[in-house]
View (cartoon, rainbow, N blue to C red):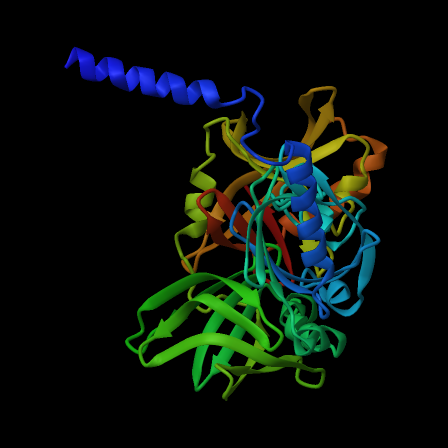
Length: 437
């Protein structure tokens, strides 16, 4: 055994002695290989005559579609289904391929793809400072056949490029995508909070959240039982497709298309599943009221020291921050705290105005309300009794406009939109509401 081992070692030593220490494992240097890889990606990106169909999925799972046309002069033209403007107007900007430990595609001037990452909540609708958790710099992950997969460098958003056909490009140029995005006009044309989809004699209440590409449905089934369904959706050149179809007995809704606004009837005409006529119209009361919602919302912060917050206040007739709260210097958020304080034996609720001073939030003034009235059909009625604190002159108009709406004798319906988020909707006309979280 020892002799055999010795022979093996001697043979290996002889073999090793024949190798030159400076023999490279690869025939090219790392830089040369990386440059060749970048050149191959450049050739691929610029080499698709009709550009690329792209799907960008943000870190929180929202899908947006793009069309890119790259050239060899570091210019890219793009469409996007972000909104009607980006779907209609082809925008040109710059891009770069760069080696940052690995090949990277960088969209280096502000363009449609940057909208999703914009930290201003007024741009994409995501949380202030965060945007929609997307990227505009991507590392190459895989190139196979007619597709390229990339991953965002900071938020791990996924971008998949697939070679487009001439027909794909024409669908953008001919306005097909604009027609599809008309679905998002439902929120702009129908100013009431509730929208009713009527198809085949059945009614479904639908709430559309364009930024997050979600649609929520509430209805009563054939037996009168309340049902609900929440799904994300994605656009195509024809319309939109639900990731999870709505199933109501024998009725299944998988897609909506052919959107057309009827100004005479104030309704949207559309087609369900490509073959069934339907309409969407406004409504001022919920189809299935959650009669306990207002109580749950109020009790969640009653006497706890916690409060509900709304950075923009009321939306009225389609106008966000209708009373200009964000224009007040150093204004941070409107808040609501149930059982804020006691006065002459009565617990008062407070709608307060929070200011950001340095790194701290300050509460200088607010509107006080008597204990609320809860109605049998799920409304909460707030009764204004006066204001607390020192009301500055530059806040008087927004303050009293806000108070007047809070002091609505018809009260509000509460709609729970998430685990800790709510919409409070005016019961008088459903054209005004405020979102709390």
